[in-house]
Length: 304
Image (cartoon, rainbow, N blue to C red):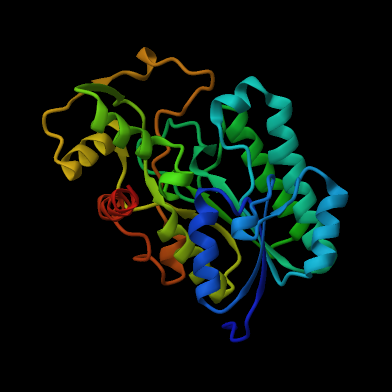
């Protein structure tokens, strides 16, 4: 097995998102060079504008930077927006992914594609592993799964597909998802309601970034689940956040998802296990979700 010893040049799409905010510093800390891109430029963080759905723009960026490796993080991840705007979802998540994969093929380089454990229909009682057959039920999950198949078809085994669970991370500036919202509600409300009949695993962006780099160093191509250990409901997470913040006076009311209607259907369970990480000797690299959550909450509070 070849272990990389030289420094690498990484092109990163979606670098200004939650996962990119953790991945970029980790890559830099290893002495590598990065070319961070996103749909909107960010001069403060040297992030260059790139519309991944624009094939010519993608090809130009690849010719300019000549990367050794590509992390394709960019996606439309707003599940309900995808359901309401399916053409937009397909443009970004399917066409954009195809453009990145074709550019990688043209230059003979390897790509890592970020997908979701939401590609399953949620009917399995046990956690899903990488050998289970996906059956996506929302526009978002269908486009992400189609992206997986595009990557496989174009890159012919020289790829990584990393499926995340419920993403947490990014800090106060990038976290637009569940954790930051619950922290805000617990600090401002006396009672909140949280869904208790949908299950999954949090995925802490720091842990996922560390795990991705470890897999890539081993050059073990293929599909991997990357979730923190242990499944839970959103209600369980909210209760752990309340405990950490010492907000015992705030009542958290468990509710059914039917009481909180959304545009896109969600599977009953996205709970997953990291079977293939274990097979390559990295079974312990993703921590229990409670431990990862506490570390992230400490980060959020320190930023206040």
